[in-house]
Image (cartoon, rainbow, N blue to C red):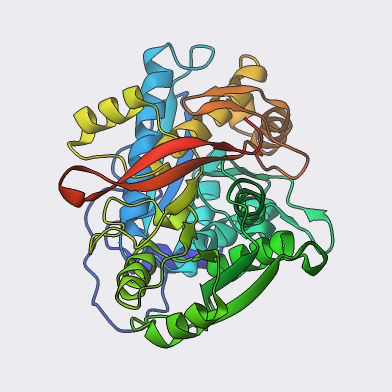
Amino acid sequence: MRAVVLAAAALAGLGCPWAGGSARREVVPERVDPLVLPVNGTPPDGALILAAIFPTLGRYAASGIQSLQGARLAVEDVNRRGGIHGRPLALVELRTGSYFVDARAAAELATAANALAIVGSNSSELSMAVAEEAEEDGIVQISNVSTAQDLTWDPRTGRNRPFVFRVCSSDDVMGELLASFARDRLGARRAAVLYEVGRTYSANLARSFIHRFRDPAAGRVVEEFYYLALETDFRPQLARIKEFHPDVVFLPGSFTDATLVAAQAARLRLRPTLLGADAWSNPLLFSQGAPPGDAYFVDHCSPPAEFNRRFRAAFDAEAQGCRAVLAYDAVLAIATGLRALGPLPPEALGRDLAATRRRLRDAVARADVDGATGHIRFDRHGDSRRGVALYAVEKGPGGRPQMLVRGWLGEP
């Protein structure tokens, strides 16, 4: 529990997992101590405690805040319908920084606070830190948008993490489906892949796409191109890509990278079809102008209009992509598992808590969940393989790019 001790010491007013108060921290370039903000309020007696671990500070904060808000809406809905066998759900919000030690400390705090399960985190880096603690402590973790293939299982060894689940597709699945789309729907034969060196998300997507697309015997070839973190001038790579004459260019990076690449490609008169993945899901995509040719990307869902309306009314903000609605569905998956356990006696939440957590793990693994984004069922690795939504980027009013759903790739 060393991270719990570090987190508690670093936070003023955090005398116990439910302590209120505020914390002031000195901002330093490099942190060693974990950053977990104090939790306000105490769960009601007899409540079923669910921990939400998401960053609200740092590089992943925007996604983390929306994820947390989606989890709140789900808990509200479960409790509005009577809770679970008469017991309310209580959401303990463990808001962190965007560093893996922060997430790990929060996971230890969740275990110490008698949480039955954890929702989070959004970044694969943070979710992996949570997963290590979840497995060690025997507590269910469900991530909403963490895509690293080895979060739930290691494909090289076949080793599963039995307590770790996700309600989104993995990098491997997204890369495979995009390669199939480029090959079978677009008729592409030459693909350039421009990805960020050192970023696991970008490299994993690139590897999956290349593996599924490349087939010299069938006339399909791939050329790889690279860039470094924080690089903003892509003209040298784009000049070499132009010489390759690709049908498609796959950009498995952020929406900011894709926006810069598109603008610079237009100036070089490079007009292949651009492809991207879920990191493109942002209203600022191509804010410097529409891409020079066709552009498509995939995301984990197509958020229902009713959910978006409710999110807007609750938080006076727009839900961006699938982060909030899939956090909502992660909570519903845990609630479905809890209902399957039947009424829980007091000792199930006390001295027998470890056994209850194991029973919940088995119930979640078997659960059929009717989520806001559709039916969810986990495979033997803890992944929900439901395919991805296909978006096209098209010119809207005034020439501004707009993102429109154009179908579904993979299993419905």
